[in-house]
Length: 496
Ligand code: MN
Image (spheres, helix red, strand yellow):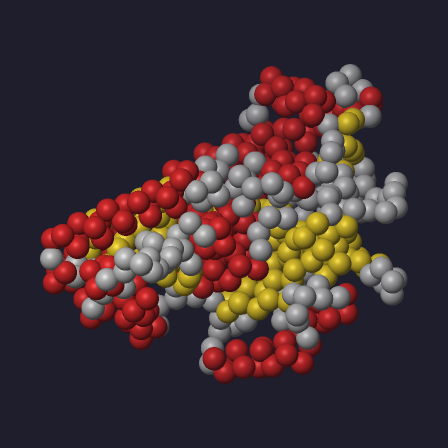
C-alpha cells in the first residue's frame, strides 16, 4: 500500500529583521496557524509542517538545504507575509532541489474596513511581498506552482492538494528502480528511449535482468504458497468449475499463481517499484504473466508490456499521485476503434495485462489460448471498466527532450456484451472529439501505450511535468488541430 501521510511539505514564510520583534512574533503565529490549517484540511494527502520564519540569507539557505536532504520532505510551500527582500533568496533558491509551491495568500481574508491602520498594513503585505519573491523565482527561471487565494479557500486548497500529489509522485521516482526483463520488443520504436537521459531527468533507473533470474525464483515457489494463492483467487473472482482446485484446467491457474508469487518476490526482494517484460523473451516461463501483472499493478507496482519502461514508470508515478482517491491508475493500450459517427469510441485493452484496480464489479478469472508468444494458455482477469472522466498519458522521447502528452477522455460503460473478448476492456471518447483527439495524439507522437487515470487531471500532469522540467502537451475539450500543431512547432523552437 502506498501511504502519502508519511510525506511532508514544509511551510516556509519569508520576512526580514527590520520589522522588529513584535511584528515578527505575529508573523510566526499567523504562519503556524496557516500551516496547521492547511495540514488539517481534509483533502491534503500529506503533512504540512511549519518551519520557523526565515529572515536572512543564511536562514533561507539553511532551511532550503535542510529541505533538500530531509528524507520525507517532498516539497516546500513559500509565502511572504511581509516583505522579504528577494536578493536574500538567491543563494538558497540556487541550491533548492525540491518542488516549490508559492502560495500567494494573506492571513486575513477581508480588509478590516473600520479598524485598518498602518500597523495592519505593515504586517499584512503579501500583496507586494509575494511579488518581490515571485520576481526572483522568475528571474532565476525556477519552475514552481503559484496558487492564489485565501488559505481557507476551497479552490486554493484543491490546487495545493493537486500539487502535493504531483510532488509525491515525483518524490517516489527519485532513486526508484525499475526492472526490464529482457530488452524491448523487437523493432518497436516508441516504447524505447534513452535510459541514461531518463535517469538524469527523472531520477529513476531502469536496468535489465535476464528472464532466467526471475524464472529461478518462480521455480522455487512452494506448493503451499501456490495453493494458498489459488484459494485466494477462488474466493475473489468468478471462476469456471474446471479452473478450480481438482478441475481439469486447474493446472493453468496453478501455474499462473506460481508466476505471480515468484514475480512479486523478485520485485519486493530487489526493492523494485515496477517492471516490464516482453513476450519475445520469456524463456522458461510456461505462460505469459497475465493475472500476475494485473494483480501486481493493483497492488501499486508500475508495469507496461513489451519492454516499455517509460510507461511502467509513469504508471507507478500515477499510482502514488492517486493514492487514496476513488478510481484507478493503469497501464493501457489504444486497441481498436468504433467509428460510428454518432458514437465514436476507442476500445482500450491489452493482450492480457489490464490493471485489476480498474475492475467494475467482480472480475472473472479465465484461461484462454493466446495466439502470440508461443506459450501455454495464460490465466487473466476479465472485467468491464466504469465510465466517467479519465485521461491517457504518454511520455515520449523526442530525441532532444522528453514530452508528456495527455488526452482527456470521457469513459463510457460498454453498451453491448463482448462475449468472445477474453480480456478486460475500457471504452472512451477522446476529447474534444474522436477525430481531433486521435489526430492530435498522432501529431504529438504519443505512444500506443499509456498510463490511464480515473482520478488524476491535466492539472496534476502540468505540475508533474513542471517538476520534471519537461515539455507538456494537453489534448482536451478546447483543443483544435491548427492550434495544437502550432504549439508543437513553437515548442520545437523553445527546446532547440
Ligand atoms: Mn502493448
